[in-house]
Length: 187
Image (cartoon, rainbow, N blue to C red; front, side, top):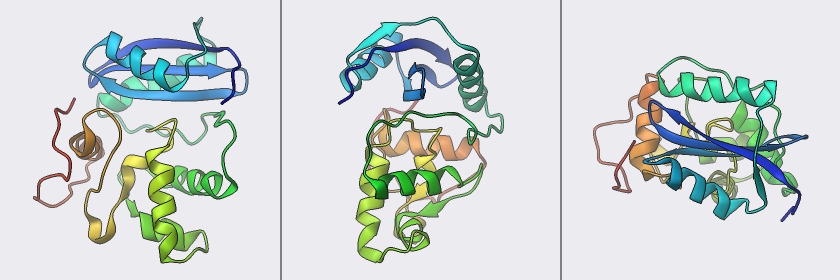
């Protein structure tokens, strides 16, 4: 893990409290909405422990505004947000790059992403692992990646699959009428 100092803030959205961490290279981590500022901060610190409560840069301010607008239901494009994903496996980098091209209101599947990257169907599990370890959900829109057959699949963010469904609904995407695989309190 990179032990460099990162700046961070916690901010409120219509979906709950988010947290964002960054350094000079770019956004390092985004914590999706939690019920309280303390919970968002705690989750962020667990994943990136060397942090300094920071002063916003213009880039981070723009990203915070975009995240806030997203949870108000506005169409937002995060494709130009500069990221610092740290050291990643080359295949994960390719997965994240392909996922960033899945636009607002669109979905894909783990298997389709694997195929797009020239890998066989067994690589769908690798795609799932990349999504589960996504350090900047929403900016890398892992909520738009579904399981086979268009099923919602899992989601490791607060609220689990219910949060994933809610984010997709903000984009006008409806996934069947079945219950999510994980049942937790959503935002």
